[in-house]
Image (spheres, rainbow, N blue to C red):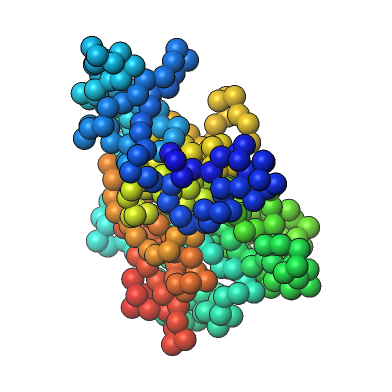
Length: 364
């Protein structure tokens, strides 16, 4: 990857380096990129072809290939077939079903990300809270929300550089988040994840926000401070069906993998990580992560979940892939929307919060 940032160049350049020069949100894809297979015995170059194109892979993807070495160039191989971990590991188990889906009311999990308190329109934050409380929109649908998962980037912070930092503003934004979470967690269980912009350790897997930063909300039993990524089993309210498994992250994994791929569709990138059975294959190359010997790899997937989501994405998108519901959760600060996932059918709907109330999805 000719355009990928180089840590050595970054160090030689005094810290500016290719990462800053290239800029956030820019692709690493170049016409001259090639693909190599690496293992503990050596490296082979993959000849350009349709079976395993370089433009559809990132660094760090584990694959099994059937290939043939070229007689004129033994270090170059032609790939005839390929298998990803997703082809060899279990798909998501059958979704939980009630005796009669047409008679029982649905139970929802709400996914929301990128609240960015201090930057987001306070009226839209208030509408979100009022909707969950049943004060605006479809009160019947709101009453069926079992829990809310907040997928990172919950508070706006001024940490770009020392000159633009505003500690007083940061403290005020944290206080606003604390008050919001205290009210929300008093209504139903809330899982607060951390993201790249939150006051928490940056490297994946991220540790939860410290309780001292949210004193009022942390005293409410309904608040669960979670790390990033998150893995949960959520049972239906009648406790008679199999719990659904939910796996997700605050979006850094998809954002970074997107830079390696010619594909612009973020949902397709999320689907690729499901097929690869790894949330962050580009770590630690261009995504900071903690060292791991493989004994406790929370970024890998032993089996597919019922729901796989990525937070803080530009727009809402969803589809089913091999029994798994994929969801790109939009950043609330830019879209004023959240997502409701039906725990039995695994259908996902967008709910938009605007000045006249909650509209769209199942609460129109």
